[in-house]
Length: 215
Image (cartoon, rainbow, N blue to C red; front, side, top):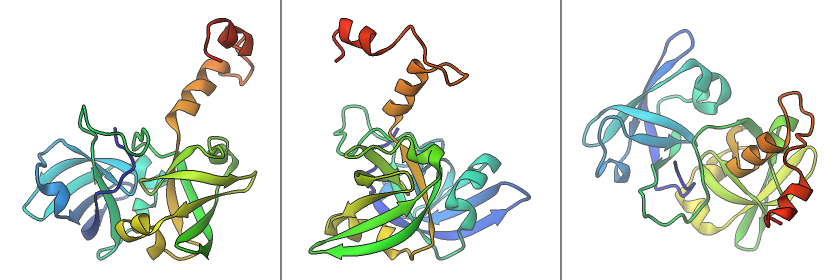
């Protein structure tokens, strides 16, 4: 589990691709201070398991499903990635609950500066946008951000200078893909309220929630 607060920007040193999977070596510094094999590292929002590590790098295996669903498939040596270690029990949850299990990719369609911030517009498929809620949380390439606008085709976030300086988001160009993970709470609510066929589960509805003090 992660918070979406990026600790540092790493650099791809090497990537060995097989038919569908890959093995990635990433140069880093801060996150290596207490690293050990088996640890989880959020890499552009994707939870990867450390298989090997040195004083200035770590290696992880990337399975086929992750390569299909994320922008890790597009990485080359020299590319930069957002890195975050797993949340420590008892630590501050400064962002939001991020699993590192992305829903898919969106595309950056526009950057717009407003005073000290930059608005980023991202287009995405309907199956991703249904989890994007105005004023809710979203992880973009592993960065916890607040949704400032959302409609049926795009959503927008606003980046402050701190986020700009410590992540890769504003180093990207329009048309580039980004990994998106919606708020996990919304997914659980959807699962409880609807059956596998997409029909409303009459066991839990608004009346049930009201009678039991949830709303």
